[in-house]
Figure (cartoon, helix red, strand yellow):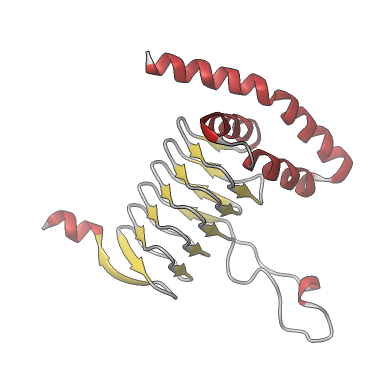
Amino acid sequence: MKATFKSLANVLAGLVVLPIVAWYRISILLIGEVQAFSDCSQVMSLLPGLSGIYLRRAFYWFVFPKVGQNACINFGTVFSHSGASIGKTAYLGVGCMIGDVEIGDDVLIGSHVSIINGNRQHGIDRLDIPVREQSGEYPRVSIGEDTWIGDRAIVMVDIGKHCVVGAGSVVTKPLEDYAIAVGNPARVIGSRKEIAET
């Protein structure tokens, strides 16, 4: 019964967001993809409750390359790039900011987490040009399956599979599979694989 309800709710959510998807496609032609996507992502982030979760998942299913079954995108979560992807049963908490990120299956992302595309998004080499006008680098970031990122963490690089990132951590260097990392800057303090083998 529960599976049938979820299926019907997904279909209904898909129908409800069709006008928003159409508005997004038209806006791309009028104001460009970056601004159109930003506008829609912010609007979709403000839909409250369980219905908001279904509507966000449906909207991003039409827009992103991949949105896995039963992915949960909570209130206030905003994406900055239409190329993001979300794995099945991934969970994104309240108020997250997500860039061009590939989120694996079964990933848990706490509330108010920022996942940005590298730490060189703005050039700072020249003093005669404002920072906002200097070119930067935006590498795609991936979060491996079954990784848990705690509340208010900031992630700038790839994180492997089965990792844990402590709340409030700032991840500036890639993490290998099974790493447990905490702090600012985050440092590896253990391995989930070693814990599982004991």
